[in-house]
Each structure stands twice: as C-alpha cells, then as structure tokens.
Amino acid sequence: MKILERHPKEKTADTLCIIKTPKSSFYYVQFYVSKMFSKSGYYLQSTKEKDKRKAWHRAKEIHRLFDKDSVVENTQNTKSVFNQFVYDFYDKEIDDYKELYPLENFKASKWYNKKNRWIAEIERHFKDVDLKNKHSFEQASNDCMKRLKISGGKDQSGLDYETVQKYRTDILMMSKFAQAEGLIQFLPSIKIPEDIIVKDKTKDYFFHHELEKVRKSFLEDFEKTRDPFIDEFVDVIQMLRSSPFRPGKEITNIRFGHCFVNTNNPKRPIINIKLPKTKTSKKKKKIHHQSCHPLFTQSTFIERMMKRYPDLKPDDYLFFPHHKTRKQREALDQRMRKTFKKKLEELNLYYSKNSKPRTLYLIRHSVIIQLSNAGASISDLSEMGNTSPDMILNHYLAPQSAKDGSILNARVFKNFKEN
Image (cartoon, rainbow, N blue to C red; front, side):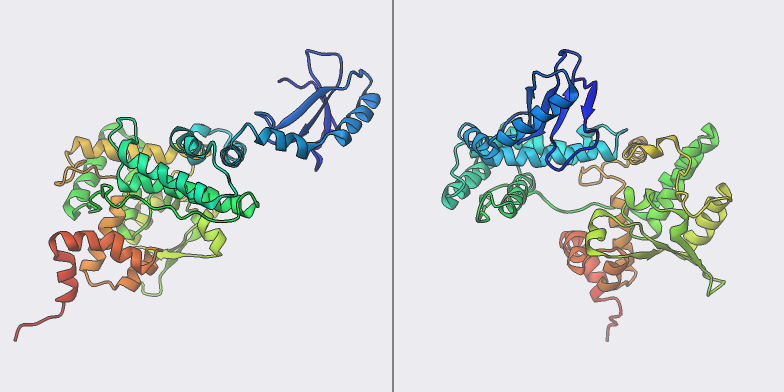
C-alpha cells in the first residue's frame, strides 16, 4: 500500500498514526495489534475525516476504544497460536535481515528457510494442540518426528537422523522462546525414533599433494587469464592451510588492523590475527587470536599480499578489499566456494575415495589432522582452532581414527621405542 503522508512521522511506542493513501481523500488510522489479527498485524480504519487535526483526534479515540485483548482472543479460536507465534518470530528475523542487508536476497537467509521448513513439515502437527496440556504438546512433537522418519522429505522415503534432528531443534528453540513469552509453561521432551538411519559421520580431508595441485593449477590459470581474483584466492587457500581457520566470514571479515607481525624471532616471523567477533563470540564476550605458520607469513603474507596492497589502512579488509561484491554479504563467499568446487571438479578431486564431495571447509579438517599427526596436543589444537577439545576429538579426529586407526596410532606410539 502506497502511503502519501504519515502523522506523526516518527514511530511511537503504541504505533498509532494516521495515513493518507492515493485511493481515498480521508485519513486512515493505523496501529499494530498482532499478526494473529491480520497478515500485516496492523489495524486499519478510515477516520472519515479530511482535516488532519480532526482525523488525528478521531484516530486517538478509535485507538482508545479498541479492545486488543478481546480481538486477539477471538482470533486465537480460529488460528493455531503456537504456529502464529513461530511465524511472527521468523517474520521479525526476516525483516531484520532485510534491513541489515538490503542488497541481499532475503530468501537466502536461514530464517526464511526455517519458516518454509516449519510450514512444510511441522505446522500440521500443532494446529489443534492445547498449549496448556504438556502431554498433547509432546505428543504432537513426537508424532512429527515419527512421520519425518517414515515418510518425510520430497521423495517420501524418510529422512536421516541429522535432518530429523534439525526439525527437533527448530521445535525446541521455538518452545524456549514461547516459554519466555509466557505462551507455554514447559519445555517438551522430544525423542527421535531409535531405529532411524544414522549417516556415516566420517569426515574426509585433503592430502598435502592434492592442495598443492590445486594451488599450482590456480596459478597457471592466473598466468593465462590475469584474473586478479584467482591470484588473490590462492592466498586465501594458503591462509586456510596455514592454520585451522574457518572459511567464509572468519576469513573475509579480517581487516588489516586485525593483523600483527611478530618479529621477536627475526628468523621465524609469525602473523598473529585478532579474529573479528561473530554473533556467538559477541554473546560470550570472547576474543580469539590465531597465528599462522611461519612459512605463510614470509612467502604469502609479506611477499605477496602486502606487495599487492602496499597502502592498506587498518579498516581495509585483508582479502579483496576493493572487490565489487564487498557490499553483498554472501556474494564473495559464494564465489570462492564455487571457484574452489569448479577447480576440484576440473582436477578430479571433488569426490573423495569414499565418493563424498569435498568442500573448502575440509581444508580446516585437513589442517587439524595434519597438526595432530605432527604431535600437536588436543588442548593446543582446540585453542588455536577456537573450538572445544570434545569437538576436536569427536568431530575432527575421531572419525578418521575409527576408520583406519592411523591418527590415534600415531599419537599413542609417537615416542614409543621397541625394546
């Protein structure tokens, strides 16, 4: 709806205002009620007044006499309250995403995907549930888990454990928010069926010679095309290989001012990086510093990166500081992932010997495995990788150890000598 005029211009706490539209000569009163009341959540009514002062007086009178609680209560009788609460929550997150990232496609946000996931697979189970009855709520949740296990997904063949777990997490997360708002008084106990298919969690990795092949191939491409993106992307890969960084925002959000070259040992200079705060680290008030392999500091950071951008300012990004996609939140990361995948396919390295696709993120796995084989302790790896020791053992190292025993064997018998 196009609005020609709004009074007052600034939003008030009660959202009350009068507006003028092209379709009427009268002012309309508008204020927010609830998305259980209407799709937009707003109440809209003509004041039948053309004079702004009289219209504003009439608007305040309509607002004062409007029984919001009664309207919402009546609406709740015909709509699923819990589902509507969920949609209100997701809609707000989607609106915030649009405001923060106006150049991005909001349909790529996780909140948009979560909302569609709820609509497709969860909504139906909560339409007639009494929110005051814990048994009914838990029954609906567990019925959803059972259905997904048996016939979920587009091919109706049933979903695996990890996918069903995502739906369970969605229900639990929204239950916690609903409990905080006083909508429900409990948290449900949701169980995933015991006989559900559990995927093989074995993580693949890259060998050193494979990543070297990728690096040299990219440099050959650059010699032919002179594409500066390719040349700089080689440095991104080298940085990922130099320390257990996470590809994506952890790398692309680093600014020059976050970097410090430690030359206490002139023969072995190292670069220390204060990683930018993420949504999680802001909540935990955690600051993480990560250092890179000395060879990367000299051969890549000093010899290539600093010579490429000799006039970088502290606020300039370390990688692709002038790239045209910088204003688009996901575009740069997507291009790097696609470029890496294309190169792996070209070199017949995309699929591992286990026929699993390999991504840029697996370089992190490879570095942690390589450092562990070289004798790095679990505590040091968890500190440098900015994760927990349990995550190192159970996510990065355990699958490979269980598979062929090589990693665990190397750590246990590292200093063992036969009698």
